[in-house]
Length: 548
Ligand code: HEC
Ligand code: HEC
Image 1 (cartoon, rainbow, N blue to C red):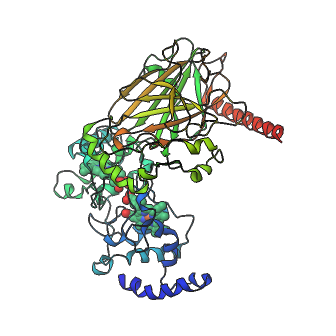
Image 2 (cartoon, rainbow, N blue to C red; image 1 turned 30 degrees about the horizontal axis):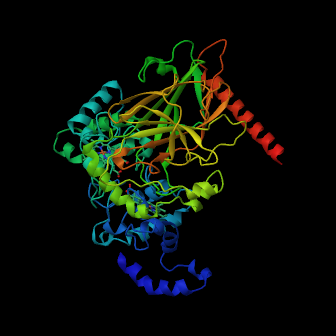
Image 3 (spheres, rainbow, N blue to C red; image 1 turned 180 degrees about the horizontal axis):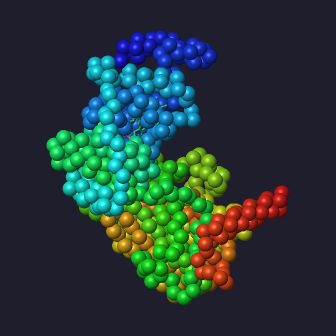
C-alpha cells in the first residue's frame, strides 16, 4: 500500500544526501533494488514513466493501476505473488521487460514483489487473489488440432490474429490497450515471443485468464455459457501451439547456398525450394544512428539460398501483417509515429557519432558524420514494405567488412533492394538510405519475385554469379565466405530510411560442386561450417600478424 512508500519519502531524501555506503541499507525492503534496476523503465513512482519508457512499445507497466497480464487469476483480478515472481524471473519475451533469474536471490524477489504491490492501493483493498484451478491437458492428436482450428475461427481468434495466426486479422490495425496505445495482436507462429511463455500450458492459462489491460479477452465465460467445453479450450491452446515450430529457431552464422545441377527454382514458391536448408536471421530496431527506431515489425527473416554455378537465388521469408502501403493501416501508422516520435524527434535527425562509435567497426570515418541527415517518417505519408541485402563490393580475404549500417564514403556497400510494388534494384550505398544506382538493365541484372500471403512476404532474388565487369558490383564465388546482412522495413508501421529493422553480418557460402550428392547432409554441413569457421579465424589471425 502507498503508506509505506510515502512515509519513506522524507527518509529517502535524507538517504540521498547520505554517503553512498548508507544508501544500500534501505528501510523499505525492495526499494533499493527497484530504484536501481527497475525505475529506469517503470519510473521511481511505479507509473511506467521511467526515462527509458518513451522508447518502448509496449510501454513499461504502470504499477499504480494494478493491471497485470501474466496471471493465474480470473480475468480482471490482481495477480498472485507467485505470478509476479514468475514474471520477474522470466521477463516478458517479445518486450523490453528482461528476466532476472540470474540476477536476484529469492529474498530479493520477494521484497521486489512486495514493493511493486505497494504502488497500487488495490492490493490492500481487495481480498488476496487466488490462482484458478486449471483442468489438466487432454492428449492431442490430429483430430484434436482440427477441432482446435475449428474453434479458433468460431470464437474469432482469427479476427485479431489472422487466418494463419500471423497477427494480421481484420481488427489488427485498430487494436489499442486500456491506455489507448496501439498494441499488436501476437504472431502466434512465434511462440518464443509470447509474453507469458510459449508452452501449451502457458497458452492455455492466457486463454483462461486473459491479458488484463489488453484487447485479448479471457475465454472462460464461453465455458460457463456452455458455448464450448474445457476440453475444447485446451484444443484451441494445442492448435495455437502447433502453429509454431517445436523448438525456437537456432541462429547460425553461415548461410549455405547448396549447389543444384541445372535450373534454379523458377519461382518463389517452386517445390525446388523445399530441399534448400532454412536459416533464421534475427533483426532488431535500428537504434545506432538517428533517427532511431525502437519499434520494428520484422523480427526475423528465414533465408534459403541455392546456386547452380552460374546464378545465385535467395528466398527470403518474413512476417509483416500489412501489405504496405495499405490505407487500413494509416491510422495505425500515425499512432505508432506519435508514440515513438518523442524518443527521437526528426529535429535532431543527425547521425549520432557517439553511439555509432560503439559499433563493431569502431569510430566512424569523418565523412559519415557529415552525412546529410536521413529524414524520419511523417505520419501522413505512405511507405512501401522493403527488404535489402547488403554485401561488400568484393569478397574480402580476412574478416574486414564495411561499416554494417550500409557502409560509408570510404567503403560503400553493394546492395540489393526490393520494395513492394517495384522491381528490385542493385545499388551502391554510402550509409543508411544513401543510395546510388549501380549497373542497370544489363543481362544478369537482379531479378525479384514477391508474394504476399496472409501476413507473410516471400521474396526470391536472383542474379548471375559473374559481376559482368561492372565496377563495385560483387562477383559471387563458390567456396568463399561472403559477408551478407539484411534490413527490413514495414511501411505501414511508419518505417523508412534509417528507421527499420537491421541484422548483423552473416556469411553466405556457395557450395562447391560435390561428386556424390547435390545436397549436403546436415552432419556434413555442420562439419563444413566448423571448418569454415576455422579458416576464417586462421585468416584473421594471419592478417593480424601481418598487420603487426
Ligand atoms: C528495459 C526496461 C525494463 C526494465 C529494466 C524492467 N522492466 Fe518490467 N516491464 C517492462 C515493459 C516494457 C513491460 C510491459 C510489457 C508488456 O506490456 O507487454 C514490463 C512489465 C513488467 C511487469 C508486468 C507483468 C505483467 O504480468 O503484466 C512486471 C511485474 C515488471 N515489469 C517488473 C519489473 C521489475 C521488478 C523490474 C526490475 C527488477 C523490471 N520490471 C525492470 C520493461 C522493463
Ligand atoms: C480483440 C483481439 C483479440 C482476440 C479476439 C484474440 N486475441 Fe489473442 N491477443 C491479442 C493481443 C492484442 C495480444 C497481445 C497482447 C500483448 O502483447 O500484451 C494477444 C496475445 C495472444 C497470445 C500471446 C500471449 C502472450 O503470452 O503473449 C496468444 C497465445 C493469443 N493471443 C491467442 C489467442 C487465441 C487462441 C484467441 C482466440 C481464442 C485470441 N488470442 C483472441 C488480441 C486478441
